[in-house]
Amino acid sequence: MSNAPSKGSKTIRRVVINDASCLIDLHKVGLVEVMLQLPYDFVVALPVAYNEVLDFTSADWKCFSDAGLIQVDLDPGQVGRAIAHRSQHAKLTAEDCFSLVNLLRIDGHL
Image (cartoon, rainbow, N blue to C red; front, side):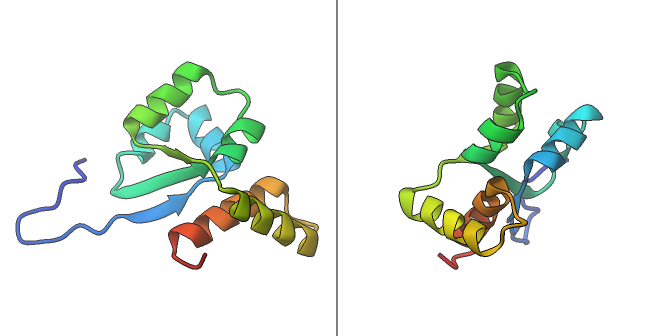
């Protein structure tokens, strides 16, 4: 499947935020690379990648990166906002809050 726009049309690539459970489940059935062929940008915050997806090897991450998975580092202000969300919503994990802040950043809300 190509992500290239067809003639006369403009492809809009939305950003999809992955948390660890999405990546783990898709990896179990060998579909991460297939998912990354979809016409979307897939982004995972580094804390999620490093803290929750411990079973992935360096080779896995390189393969995913080569296929288009984007790992983003959060700046100190974003980390602070994630911690504030966590303190306000105790049922969320820290990684949930990092993903939320990353989504809000991408959507232009931060």
